[in-house]
Length: 97
Image 1 (tube, rainbow, N blue to C red):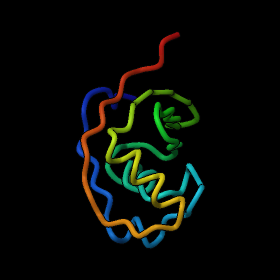
Image 2: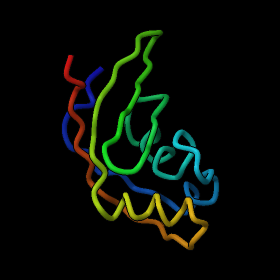
Image 3: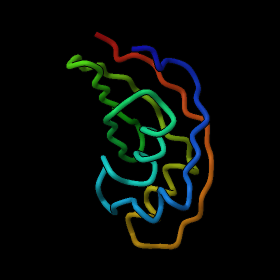
């Protein structure tokens, strides 16, 4: 599984409409990540992110840090504030053993 590197992530109005507040696996950014990358499962939390990836029964773990605007989006969305579609770049690196 190779998702290392920088990826452009686009959070759409549909991601926002179907996202679940305070749910790190079903928030709008999680939805956008699973659509943009060849992954089935992702966990998004403020600050440093852990991303668990499952492919054919094997789990992989990658780390990425949300940029400030994406981190602020998570906080506003979870508080129930209005948010709008946006895009950001996210750089993934493998977990250190």
